[in-house]
Length: 583
Image (cartoon, rainbow, N blue to C red; front, top):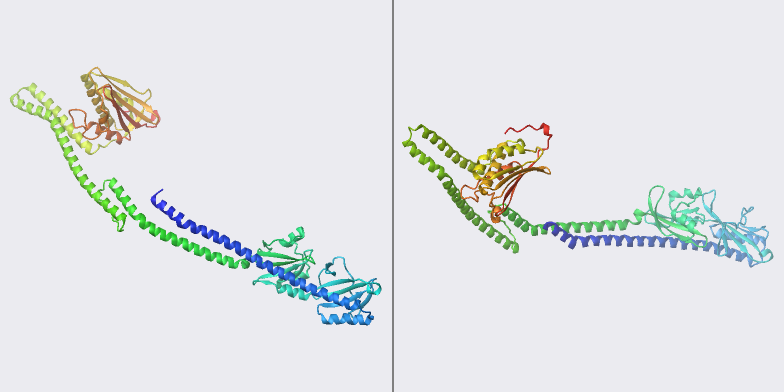
């Protein structure tokens, strides 16, 4: 993880994470408290509606009991009883008709001018303080009505039943007056789930049709379990989401529902949530922006120093960093620039010293290697002046001069190849044939050195893609070094074998070996373990091997010998499709 990433993580942990946690907790707390507040408010509305309905029903019950008291505790004639009943009908608009029945359900008195249509009915009635209230019905005028029946206790003509036919328009108006917000309304259902009253004017037709609200979640729970159902959120048939609370009317088993669209019920909470999210997002953005700007100003000097360090590591010692801050980074930058200047000066001196040392090595090597052929050329030139008429000597002179000039040409060619690698032509090479060809060409140096040459070649033909002349030069260089390092009677071995997807060539000798401290530098330019030569043979060999996509390695033990290991990518082809290499 980079320093920038660590810094961002630090800022996120120290500032952003607590802010995000605060936002999450605040939003959760806001939603929880707002929901509880809305539910409590709606439940309170439902409870007050139940209290008003109870009060409304209690007034009608008290009125009916007052009528019974006026009729029962005084001995009145029939016409007097009818007068009392009609006075109550005139005094209370809710009363449409009151009829007094005797013990055998005979009509004793009625407020109706003609024959009464009322009959005592207690089959489905609910009791409210001793008064039986029949289920609500809708009359021909689409108005709600119900019957209240009050049994009269007594003897003789004092026993009987008092029945009142009531219109419940006031109950509708009471339900209509219960509003929650702009679109919340109340509903009233009886114990069987039938709709009694609906606060939404667009839904009142459902009352006339006698629809049941048994599919309403709260009514369904109330019918199934009988207990006061908890508030819920549900989606109606139209796909609208509602918040619904319920409160029972205990004496009648009715249920008051208060339904409000969830979008309206939680509008304030959602507005506050959006506001809180906006504030938290703005705070987060501000924190991130400020942290990023401050972090960049903090990281920029480190990045500049890192870039300068990488440039120095690539050898650009003229690199400087420019830090405008006035703090420890400025001091560090000045120290870095001083270090770069010092390194540049040291590099200049080192290059100059290395150049002088290299020129010295080249000059010494050239002086040593060229002195012998030049000396021979000089001596032969002096002799040719004296023996120019001797035909045999002229032939010897020609061969000597040609040989010495080839030596000089080889020295110059090595110098050119170490500076600019020779171009190679790639084509399939049979490794075993190449080794056999080089071994045959090296018979004379081998015999002159007095060493044995052993070949241990792979059984199968192995091919690589390379340059025949370049590979031969590498093998000749290594074999020449092996002959020169091995005492007479020693042994030089050439081995070839396939290793995985490569071809391995080993040149081993039983010579004097190389000291461990010199092994690491034997492939460098102008490094040699011999008293003669420029030290370019192994350097050129390594460059050729690398041009052929191969590797070269060496292992040695003083007094026991040295082994060079060459590895090249094997050429993966069908053997019969590979052309034979002509030696």
